[in-house]
Length: 286
Image (cartoon, rainbow, N blue to C red):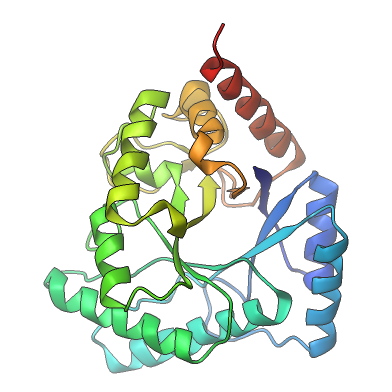
C-alpha cells in the first residue's frame, strides 16, 4: 500500500512533491487549481517533465489529482455544464502531462431532479472528458449521500460507469468516511469485507484505483461528509486498521485528506502506517 496524503501545490508541482517527501509519503494528491474557483492554473511542459522525473526517482511514486469541488456533471444548467466539462478536461490533461494515476471526481448532484436523467448527463460528461484527454484515469469518488449527490451506493457508481461505456480509464476512488456516512457499516474487518464484496459485484475491483483515508465526525448512515483526524472519529482505530489492512486494497495509493481540510501531516501519515500494521496483525493467525 502506498500511504500518503493531500499536499499543497503552492509554489509549483515540484514543491508539492517536496512536501510529500517531507511528510514521508509514498503517494500524494494535489488540486490542479483552486478547488473553489473556475480559474485554471497553467503549467508548462517543463513543469510536467520535472514532475514525471521526480516520480520516477522516488520516494513518492504516485500522484493523484483531485478535480475542483465546483464541478457538477449531473447538472442540466448549460452554463454549469460548460464550466464543469472545461474544468474536468483541464484536470485530465494535467494528469496526462504529469503521469498521474488518476483524476478524482465527485460524480455530481441531481438536487431535486430524477436520478435517471442525471445519471445519463454524468455519463455523457465522462465520455466527453475522456475523448478530450489521452491516458489519465478518471476516478469517481463515492459520496456520503447528502442531498441529491450521486455515488452514495456502489450500484450508482456502477450505473454511471456502465452508461459511460465502461472505458478502461474509468475507475473508483473509495473514501472510508463517505462509505460509513452513506450507510455501510465498515467499522470491523467483517463489515468492510461485506462492503468490498458488494463493490466487486457492482463495479469490479479492477476499477478500484485509489483510497481516501479519513475518519468520520458524523455517525453511520448520517449522509454527512465530516472528516475527522485519525483515529478520533466514528471509524476509530479498529475501523481504520481494518480499512488500511484489507488484502484487496494492497498496492493502492491510500491518501489522507485531513480532518480539518488542511491536508495531511507527518504525524497522521505515520499513524496510518501504524494502523495498517495493527490491522495486518489482527488478520494474521495466532
